Amino acid sequence: MNARIRLVGQTVQVSFVAEESQAGRLIETNMARLQSGMESAGLTLASLVVKHDEAPS
Image 1 (cartoon, rainbow, N blue to C red):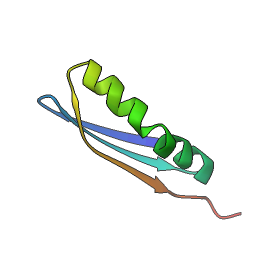
Image 2: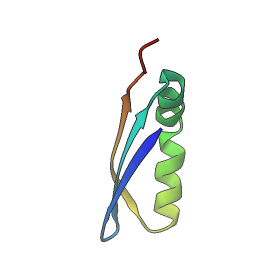
Image 3: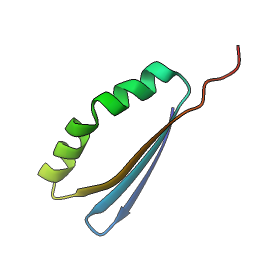
């Protein structure tokens, strides 16, 4: 899994590339928890992108 996080002031942009679709689904399922945690820290989640990049078998 790769993650890219960009912080501009109090705004956060997060991008994940998950090699397994299950990992990507877990991130998407828990997006509200991530956003809530950031808000508790005084940050705003501006965008969250999850890409699935499954390696060929």
